[in-house]
Length: 110
Length: 116
Image 1 (cartoon, each protein chain N blue to C red):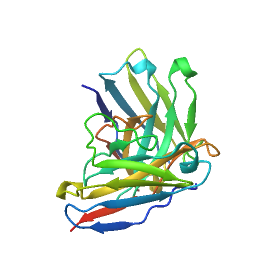
Image 2: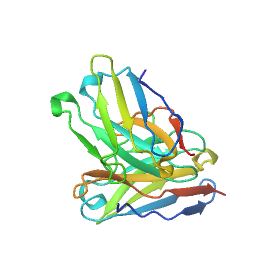
Image 3: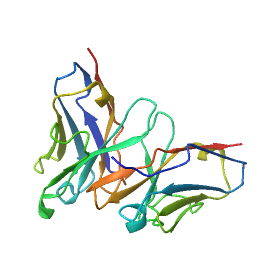
Image 4: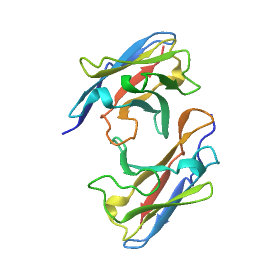
């Protein structure tokens, strides 16, 4: 089934800012925005942001999200070595009646 | 502390069945919508399905690849949520996670391998 599109990889320097994108359509990311999850190798995913820019307790303010049209974005400021992980976006698709995920972006901190 | 603990994974032959369980604690389980997500080896996350709370109708939604083969149910008296998987295919091989519908809380996952 149709999903969201994320770039496979992004690289950015230590203490720099990285922006990850997630493109869908008006039925998913363009409707209610996206959730963003972080996954380190061998661990379950962790929710970073939901409904675009709502942060669960304990999540650093270095993580923020935005949306423009059908594209959601995750911005990570002041990159740290521990930010190196896979990042997934997800949105409810009102036409499929299903959550859809992006393929994930592997973030490398140089 | 909220905990989700999956169990029931294992090795099964194609065409076989398996039932996964997810025990939930630290939440008012009856109010929570629960979701199953899977991750094939080396691949991304894939939504499997969800079950609403009984107060919201207790209905289920499924991803197209598993519809008609997988069934999600819940037992609010004991707080597990179940994933009954029938007619398993090799492409169902994955780590299966249970999570709250908002993705706020996750279990550690249970491995399901479908192979002859």
